[in-house]
Length: 202
Image 1 (cartoon, rainbow, N blue to C red):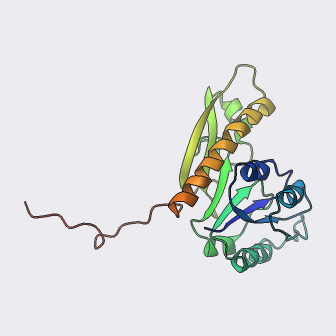
Image 2: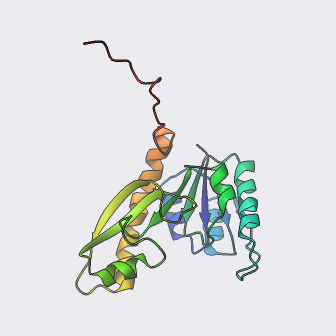
Image 3: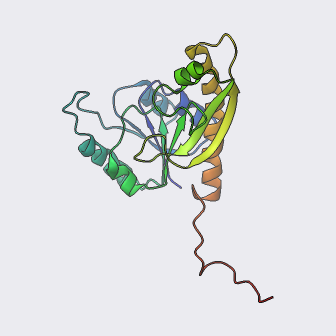
């Protein structure tokens, strides 16, 4: 499977993936960022499809089409989000349905959305964690692939808890991606009745 990573920030997750030996074929960024330097240092091809606007005039659908064309042209099979800063519209999910991965700093379906760590602390949970899931057009709503728990300390702040979650999240993400690459698919294909093994008559 040909693997692409989408990144926008410092590239720490990307760097961890490459240091661990994941065979990344392409890195795509939406703005100048540290992830480009990480890709260059590891001799991995990267493309910047720069987001033209962060205002109300942003054409999310058109921009998503641009990113999708880059991925399709590179014969990508699996798309991995690694801190990518732009939410996509439908074209990428139409082309890569069930083959886009993302992580979330909570145990979904609890605490979806942008402020998962803050929300978990405000709710008073004693255990939170992280989730690797299939990304869909509905944010944080796709099939869950893997989860790991993180204990909340009495003196945790949003920042300290999030940093501990990130350490666990990074390892879980890499292990999940490697497992997918090894087996060759994200979700097990559904078996139709005609494909199932017929049972003998009693």
